[in-house]
Length: 264
Image 1 (cartoon, one colour):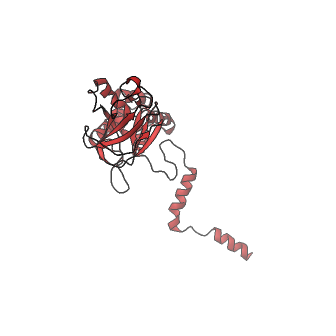
Image 2: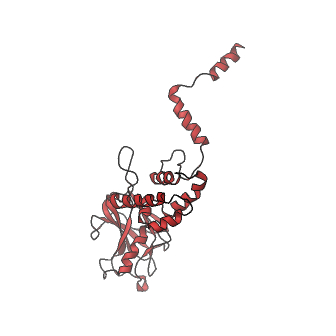
Image 3: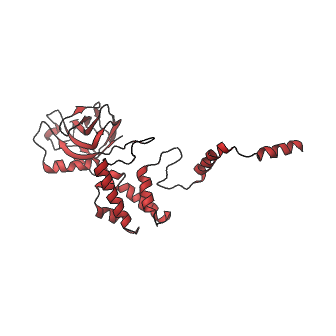
């Protein structure tokens, strides 16, 4: 009996106060609901997802918000993409969620963040960092005739958050550039030092490298050349405000596509 009483006392011993928060968080990780805006255990919360969910969940239930949140995120994966959208498009995707002033204010805030902070979603500070958001601004062809207006305008598709759209090189007979290279210029909106730049294409097999510069007309190489697969990541060693996906070989195509460019 004495042995049994000792075991009961051991089981009933109070939990040390210092360990209670850890036990509570462990319990939460095991039992919490899985929600699309909530990070998994050990992951950091995405400020954009948190912000978007907080706006949508004002006066609207979780069950209703879920599908809208997923649709919104697929269309505009970060605050910079949302800031580049038109208010009409945002309101169309929001349709059915109600309280439309939330959508208008959400969009206006994203526009301001993109305009004034280059798409900043996680301000610098203790534990914080600045996200890098690129915008396609123009074609780059220093050895050719100035690119046409349409060719320049299509540069926006190289970083619009939609992998189904693209910027493409001009068409070359015999798939020969006959020049050092051509490319698309992307603006980071401030001087940054990305560790990597990832290029997505639906015309894999061409050769490219990454250039960087502080102006939109003068660049230096900041990566090695690579044959670009459907998704290829370049290690970057250098800084600048502007970056170029610099294409030096078309890989047998008469024209190649840059569908999406991301910097981290």
